Length: 225
Image (tube, rainbow, N blue to C red; front, side, top):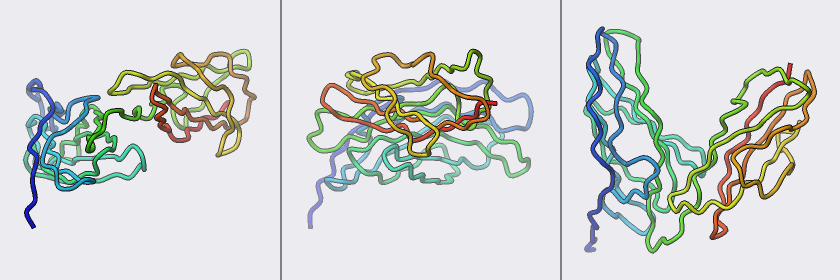
């Protein structure tokens, strides 16, 4: 069977990291897939799979790199350990991912983690992309807080390659499957949410775009002391 391979690319050149002043591995600069991009790097294998190239800067005092790729729809993580600063890997098309690099040395236990970038691995004929899952910024997962006045401010960040996010639905409560607290939030925060001392709370954010696509942040938790 003859397979047609479509060659396509994404990303941009990154900067060379500053030299390390000790024997600890340096922090890698991610090169591509680029941050918040519709990534079409690599070869189209089928309607559902494409081969994506990951590339990052070389770092000092590094013997091996750990590449962590996370499927933002399922939460599943793929870990690869290339010895060079690039690798090709097959990924599902029409799917959002995040990725980062951990630089490691064989002689010491110190490691260095890069920034975390997100991209959308484009699918065939895709004209509208679901938002990236919202990133919870405060309270952070597992954080123990003091609620002044018996309330807490909830914050998150949302991104979308189409830049057409319309609203956020906030789910909040004491159950691990929290109920809807506020629908149609247009800011990336909700202030003055009532809480009680000695209680653990669970919350998540559902992001919606203009085409009706949605994404789920996953459930986060924090405790009020």
